[in-house]
Length: 480
Ligand SMILES: Cc1cc2nc3c(=O)[nH]c(=O)nc-3n(C[C@H](O)[C@H](O)[C@H](O)COP(=O)(O)O)c2cc1C
Image 1 (cartoon, helix red, strand yellow):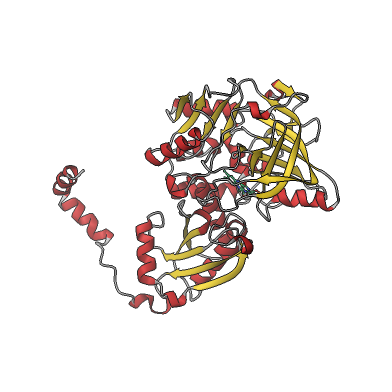
Image 2 (spheres, rainbow, N blue to C red):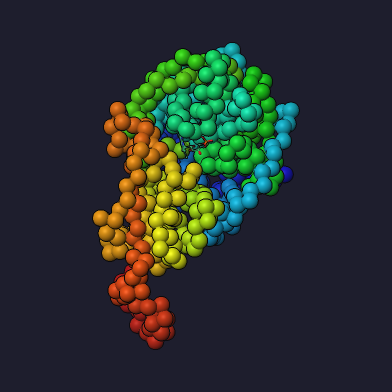
């Protein structure tokens, strides 16, 4: 077993050795830390991972790690990919990895580093430096880059989802789960039977577990078996003494507790990934904490959602683009040449690139991309473009939309899967939204007669590159 695949600390060591971990000391947890994370990501060219140490006005033994995988090299290190891959190759490698996926069941150990400290009597989560991440957050959020672990009471499979978790006192937290997510479906099954829902939460762990927690894994497959399959090596777990639920053996901080039907407290507002405090405050189920476990000098992992243009969320776009591409392939859509959820719009804005083969091909691709499992929730625009468009370059995509699509041909899908985070849907109508299907490919029936593009052709560009090599070098050097 390679510890760098399981232990956050071993992975951080590797990240530090490539100079992508920055240590910052003395930053208060109340708003300053979240504000700084946003400003650093916005202003830095290569968003580094940030480790906050010696946090004032809280227990001194704890550190907070932010922006774990907001860079392609760190993401590659976490997933076992080649760190030198470009975006398309990375997406392709991820597609291959999750295609015909072979899960590897986790292994249970009797003990693990997470049990270095066990507290049941005097639990005080408020003594930890749990951040209020955004200025208008309604409280302190211990869970952003977390795993909420539940078991299906009818079908006996374990889910581990990333859902936000807010402090509600020294030994209580509340969590928000969007409609339709697995953790909420499990909880509702317990509540429908009038039973409490046992739960484990892990608040710091190897980034591969975070990746598994926040991506769509095949239905009824545990995220631990999924992460094991990515590694081709079993994930190491221990059993929670109170719930019997799995806890990652190398987790940094974990709690065990239960949610009881009817025991709700206000949750939110919270700065959410679309860039707003849209879901406001709602009563949400509370977890009463029975036990707290942590390693010596525990590291809390934090992923405060930032306004998308701040430069966060690249890793989410890569994973979801790969999943939608696979879903298109599984549905039999041929000649898909690329899928990209631009991080500024993420789920709301998918771009699909195809080589058109038959009438209706573009529409087929768009409708499936908008409604397959990884694309259905919180979508809004699906844009299909021809294979001469660079889908990672918004200028190119806007050019295709502006010149190859006609607004009268935009299709609207109504009453699709949305949720409380959708900022443009008013409170009383939250739940559904609409989708725009924009075919920005050359119209199939006269594509051969479509006006020619006036850009220099690749062939001519090659000739000019050779012929004017020294002129180009000199002019470009001077203009840099
Ligand atoms: C940083 C981060 C925070 C998230 N917070 C929430 C949340 O509070 N509630 C939620 O339902 N989904 C949240 N998500 C999305 C879910 O983790 C994601 O949809 C995941 O696939 C859900 O797992 P499930 O399919 O097993 O339900 C978050 C994702 C990330 C990356």
